[in-house]
Image (cartoon, rainbow, N blue to C red):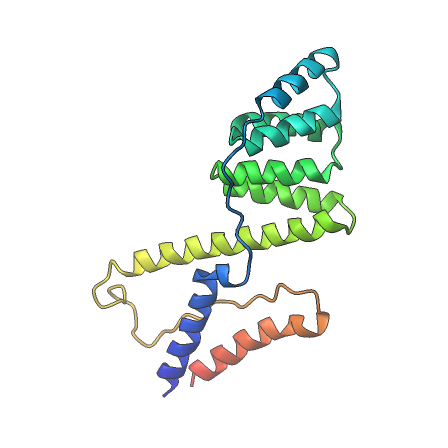
Length: 196
């Protein structure tokens, strides 16, 4: 009975980790429109004034929209070096990293912008992206663990006792301090119940 309950609980946790799209909105790139005139205009403007932060930001955003993510990253990094508190640039820099499949750099970009920013509309969006990338990282680690586990035909490495059960830690990511203790308490309850 305990094994069945533990199996159901582990299946539920795996479902939450493997299917985060049920709880978040996915960003899919739209077909890029032609922005060549605007890009040419901004490049000409930047030849006159190379440190024009607004023109640099708009150029980086246009590079991102036209899926030239390497160029967008270079331009948006320059914007953030000139104006570190520019959250719009931080958002597009993180997105460009994501579309370049550099998820750790995207996450660190979002986190550094969060540490410098005050609460506003961008802050909530950045927090959501950090949480999404964290779940993606956990999912990838879980898939790797499952692949490593599938190497053993019995599911247990040779020499390991068959009575051991692994309980993954449960972390509460919300803002309510009253519920924050539930993560640790739930993990301890699982360990106590499964140890009987």
